[in-house]
Image 1 (tube, one colour):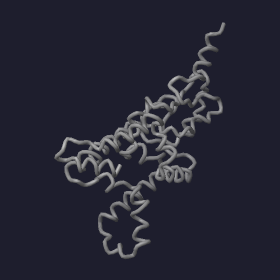
Image 2 (tube, rainbow, N blue to C red; image 1 turned 180 degrees about the horizontal axis):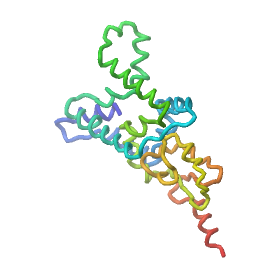
Image 3 (cartoon, rainbow, N blue to C red; image 1 turned 90 degrees about the vertical axis):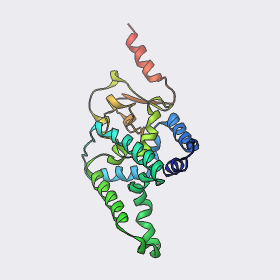
Image 4 (spheres, helix red, strand yellow; image 1 turned 135 degrees about the horizontal axis):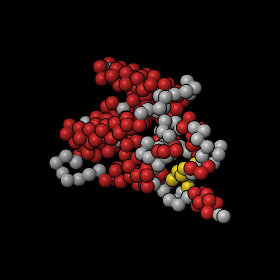
Length: 228
């Protein structure tokens, strides 16, 4: 995300876009959707671990999922273009977690540069840490601009998740298992699904994963229904 913002800042005054960054993100999204969020994001892992402190965590309202697109447009595109500053990175709690805390500890000479902005970033990080204990992946669902970019091709990615209604017993197992806090029965191919495949462990086989648009399991169910 920082590379994209730097590219946007650099293009001011020229009709150029950071195609190499944007193209890479969209290419990855077209193949695996938001699986990067489900498997490789360290801040997502932290939120999952914090969510285990309480047995039952709440789901973020679906409408709040659109907030991340506002952060992408305003903090990730418009402000970097106007001010030459990667504003999303300035507020992103992942940067505070991975660098903001440890850099002053490892390099004492940096401590004299700590100011109000550093405390603000640590405060944002602390807020999301606390929220993650009570709500499932609040940052990923509603605030992550990079997740917003990855979600653009989520519905048409080669990696697909398929819900088979005929096999579903409405036991809500998948809803409880989903770390993204969505209802896989209605939003499995939506833009908030992080394709972590937890719901594919459904004990009744109501959710399947395929590497192509066509799902053989779905065809098998349909063929069974057509049998006399």
